[in-house]
Length: 113
Image 1 (cartoon, rainbow, N blue to C red):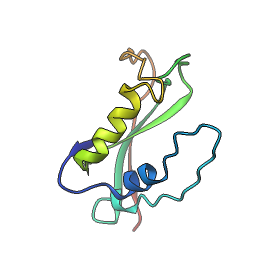
Image 2 (cartoon, rainbow, N blue to C red):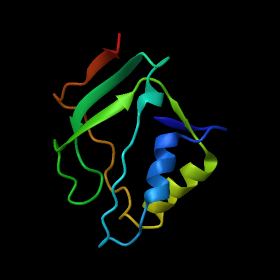
Image 3 (spheres, one colour):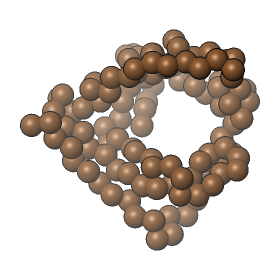
């Protein structure tokens, strides 16, 4: 989860800087998510098996991870990501909110210490 703030997210910055709109070109980058750890020591998150958000929207194909901590992104980062999905560069977000049914949601507390 992200909110718009004054501080850009370094991992999003790397993704945005390496973005290439040419689908025939493969782009590779290494991401460091250590800044998402609470005080550099723990990471609390929920996880669940969910569906894709672009057609064909298959259910149960993605393991979603949602951080308990809300992270900051800059307005420019938000605008870039929003533009990708809402200007049809990536096909839009076509999946409506789905019922949970019997799918479990698990909470994890990951500690480096």
